[in-house]
View (cartoon, rainbow, N blue to C red):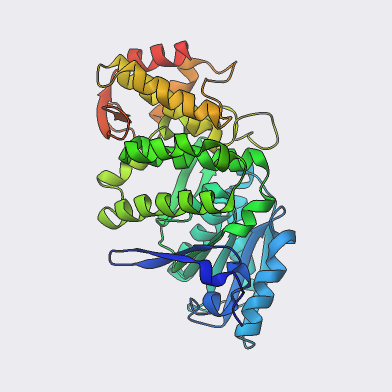
Length: 373
């Protein structure tokens, strides 16, 4: 039986060789038939974390088993937090797959935010050289960014997402009703990635976000659903054109080189240690990228200020946290996956909605922007 709200779902498609649907709407966790339709075999491992598992795992499992009673469904719950996105926690998911004798047609369902999606997706990529993963994102950040596009990874102490694989999901199912239990800080973190799509691709979307900032902050269902659908369309479009990040897809890293350096330097202490979380770090990073663009003469300061104002209206940080040394952040960026032999590569912009990749950015320009904050 389908859930009464399921008819409100929007379905988008990521094209390309390994295409898949993205379904967005309220009540999808209870739509067992839709979820079961994504499964090839009868083994399912639901991977969640200690925040999301207790809220939603039983509902998802009940819906699946009602639709397909012959399924073998196990649950793996990891501790919550970016600092848990480790090699050890990844190994524990593989042990859970081994314990249930998961076959090559098994499916991992990643139920949670970006950490769960990244780690469970990477485990699916590696178990028997690759089994299906269905991404069921429960945070705004995961819905608009990490669940779409097949990038999976774990962190090392040296840096974020250094170990991973491209492993596109079989489907993405975003139940917008789960956002009602999302802490306000996590909702704001997701809005940073929504703003990013306007910043890199579409100044008109930036204007739409300026007009709807209050409704988004208040968690208005219809406004959020629209923002999610539009964000996923931008991401699906660029992923289909560039599945392995050889070109345009790198534009999605706007703000991320700075942001990842801040996160790594803080020891991924976003949730538990007073540091910035991923979305907050990206908000700061986008402002720094806009400031660097202005310093290099690519864009105006006015564009940077417009972006900063919107992020501030969404209650996001826009300055480097106190106590992070510019030199230490620069050293982190040297290890970033977006650096190469010619020096640092940044996603910068020629103005709002006009992102581009700039290679060989001089260290002193970067240090000056970091020092100014």
